[in-house]
Amino acid sequence: MTQPARRESMVGEINTLLGRDSELEGKLTFEGTVRIDGTLRGEVFSDDVLIVGEGARVEAEVDVGEIIVQGAVMGNIRAKRSIELLTPGRVKGDLTTPSLQIDKGVIFEGRCFMEGVAEKVGAGTSMAAVRKQPAEVVGESLSSPPPPPAAKMAAVPGAAPPPPKASAPPK
Image (cartoon, rainbow, N blue to C red; front, side):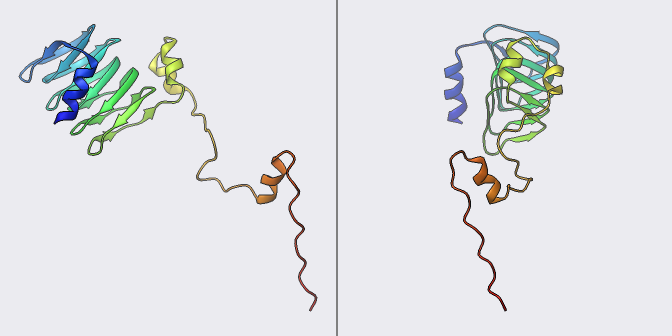
């Protein structure tokens, strides 16, 4: 796969690697870029980049600056800058980020929170508080019927009134 290698070179040098046959249980905090190819259970905290390599298994609450997922993640992911789910990645959990990319072929089961996340997360708000905020609907809902044409015309300042309805011919 050439795309992930190209993307990894863009995020910088990998500072730490948890290899394929490695297992870690507990809390992982780091600076720089960390790649996991083994198994991690617990929590992950960083303002930097986490790469979950193909074949990796992460069962954790993840709170990072950026994450690139090619392996399996079970747990909620919060990323201050971006989340990228690349094939053959699998994620079961909620995603919270201002920027999300999901490649074709990725399996994602969960919810996604994006609008307003950058401001809320940047202000040090906890994930529980972000999730409790009601969704703000922008634009028209697909499930609600459109307003009648006359109402649309009346709402436009300076618009001409609708033409009078033709009356039915007498019988």
